[in-house]
Image (cartoon, rainbow, N blue to C red; front, top):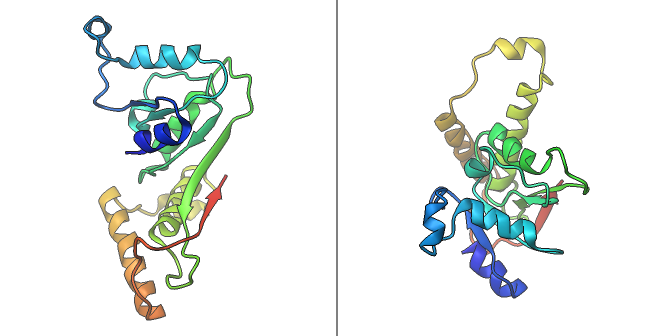
Length: 181
């Protein structure tokens, strides 16, 4: 859906590389776009182009120094996956300044004190800080929350804030966004 919207908005085809994109060169002869073919076309374009990659696919064996803007449209629970996907453009041969964007929904109406995106960002920053050793040394020895429990933590935080604020739950009509760089 994102590729279709961007393609319509920009007036150019937007390619997607995800788990469904075949890797085999032999499929290219059959007219099926492969991962290598999509990357080759991206590299040939002079000027502006867009390529959408799944973080898991982007995190394995790719070098895309032709790109210099990375937008993490949908964040994963694991900050290492996001970092690894970002690192694809920070490889030898990169000559451009790289910009990384994390779109985060914010409730501009004030009905919700913290949105899911904001709570997830807080959780990810905490995990990232732990991985980087930014927390107290004793925190390193404390058992950490399992991945599926992290989702429940965010959900419980949303419920708790909703009860405390006695406001309506998050809805698709929320407006206002900010970008953390």
